Image (cartoon, rainbow, N blue to C red):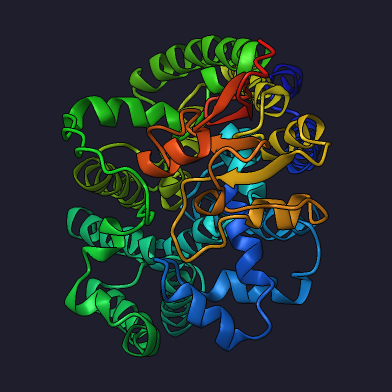
Length: 495
């Protein structure tokens, strides 16, 4: 009688394989080329002191905690510092696993939850990126654990919730999204054993009070002009001014955003990466159909009220983030979904828990196959922005004395316009775009985000001065965001 039960049981080796594959995928991903925002992180981390960092970050729209934590290692490279989010970002897994264990989920479902957090391309990409999003997810999950968990005394859970809210806000202001979503979810569901809504509000309010010193001393605009958070984030002095794009419809953006919270890139990964992720989605659809059909057959889930509150928090947070993105940015900056990206893992755990034990092993194999293909596609794909490749290519073309180097990047004006060269090629003579003279018999190498310098990152007047008397001899497109232009002196067209 025990043989069928043993044969259908999901083996522990599945979890071991997921852990090994997830860590290995992150290590490989951490070796990819950096992108511009990570160089901004390095500029902040290399400040002489905390006061200098705070003074610089006051011109930005980010909170300081993550960057202060990097300062002891600021002399290293971006790649060497990626171990910090890689290791610390994994802390979200035990908290979320323990939360679902408290609500009665079994071993197979918890293994599926952990495997999704380890192997999902979103988790791999933002789990190693030298930006605060891995920490943002960790504090959001800790707040969820404290707000909807049943283990431990209420005082401890209140203290943990207040600390997670405060630390999360000091990491990124979008920590407010899961806090609001959790409060709204508690109005929809009242599971037993969790913090009452009054205690939750008291603890959350305490966390916000701990954040007030930063608001009053460095970010008072959050009180009297909060729209600056959105309005100035991409401002670049000297950039050409374009008409604001029309606000897209929210529903299509929501439908588009749901899969991107699992796989943020597809076409941008290139041929091999695209093919592997697409194959992963094909297998994932098989998993969703099989597991969804089993769930609809009526298997009762454990801790339904607690589960409803957890899922409601994730869905409400997703909708809040999507609506704000559409209304303000006219697009979906997928990294801002770090506060709710865990909801995919919870959904997967629900589907595994709801499947019959006799079919669970095969269902789990489908899930691991899908996640494995997706993870392989993420690490095999192109980097987000191949700045290292762009710099190397520009150095190769401009090795002679007759070429000026410049980084032509769309970025906030308080950042150094040639920081990409200082960090990736410190011995190269770099010239900011605005300082390049008209044709003086020398060529110019331009590295530009969004490929076309006439539309992004530089005014038309500056571009006319740069290109006057020079011939565009060569252009190379590196990825969806970066291109390199080589302008030679007039008459030296080598096309």
